[in-house]
Amino acid sequence: MNPKNMCMGCMKEKQSRDPVCSLCGYDESERRSPLVLKHRTLLADQYVVGKVLGKPGGFGITYLGWDIRLETMVAIKEYLPRDNAGRDTDQSTVVPHSREDGEIFRYGLEAFLLEARTLAKFNHASVVRVRTFFEANGTAYLVMDYYDGMSLESYLIEKGGQIPEKLAVDIMMPILDGLREVHEKGFLHRDIKPHNIYLTTGNLPILLDFGAARFAMGERSRSLSVVLTPGYAPYEQYHRKGRQGTWTDIYACAATLYRMVTGKTPPEATERQQEDDLIPPDRIANVSLGFQNAVMQALSTNITNRPQSVRAFQDMLFNVSEQSTPPPPPNFQSSPPPLPPQPELQTPEPPYRPSSSSVPPISQSSTSAPPPPLHSQQTQQKGGIFKKILEIFTQNQTAWDTNHDYSRRD
Image 1: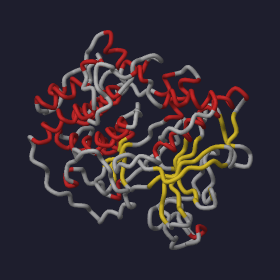
Image 2 (image 1 turned 90 degrees about the vertical axis):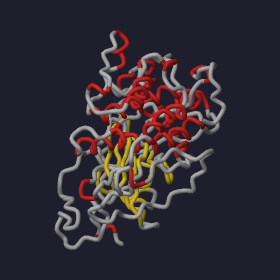
Image 3 (image 1 turned 60 degrees about the horizontal axis):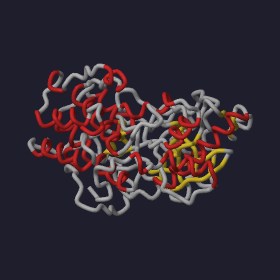
């Protein structure tokens, strides 16, 4: 198809010359921010830029894209930290605001590319997959699989703020499967929350947005506030020398489960450190004792009291999941679109994953912004800046609890 005749909101052939698509309702005549690339911008001679997916973040913009060679939709993430850079007069090139901003911009750019290399090598259906990445327009881009669906946050809002315990566990189990693979390769996510979990119309929960560039720039600018999500970040993330490890992500997963069943975000970790006023889930919602014990232990302000591995946390939740009867198979209002082919999974042992019927159906009519992904595997260190980024992105051995054997595969 000729991109000139395509709707930039659904990537289907237009039925008329009207700026409003008769198929999806997207209006190409609406004013776009000057920070956003023009419709039909061609990147790397292969990818056509369409509408913005979700709201532009502080560190990047994600677009719906069209791969003209494979003739398929993709998600394209552009590195653009708006506090440090903007769009030049050609409406394509990204330029730093100042010389000082330029140093921070390049530092984050290296982390962005490093993250891309890492994510491109992960091979798990519940971890967002990067197809390729490249540099252009003075910045860098990630090209990722595109899925119809919505974020867990949007789904919770649609359901009135909270969902039953069994459904919450069934959503979280595949995410924990993917997180296990991330941890086994020596990486942490450090920003798990409902906004970064995506529910596809194919009933597959996916973990998004590892945000390596965000963390690298937060370290460089000495501002950790830009890389934390209150309520989901444990106390150790508020300090540069905080002892982070698998338990850090487990805290965030437990906070997400707490939010799913209670409709409330846990109090900020700094507040809990002084006086722990976390309300047990059973005082807000109907939950089992096993679920409450698992979540409350994982939300401990003391890192040694939390489950020290994803497998240990899954064991606690699996017992909860087994106690309930699965819901009936979902009935889609319309047939969901076929998902892009997934790579063959190579997991060290059978994952904890509920049947597809357990995961909530997402109708195409209520879809919203797809994933913004990220993360890429260790490469050879190039100079001091690259070495520093690797130290931030990977975990120092001193951050891991030497009292536990993390070399084993959970």
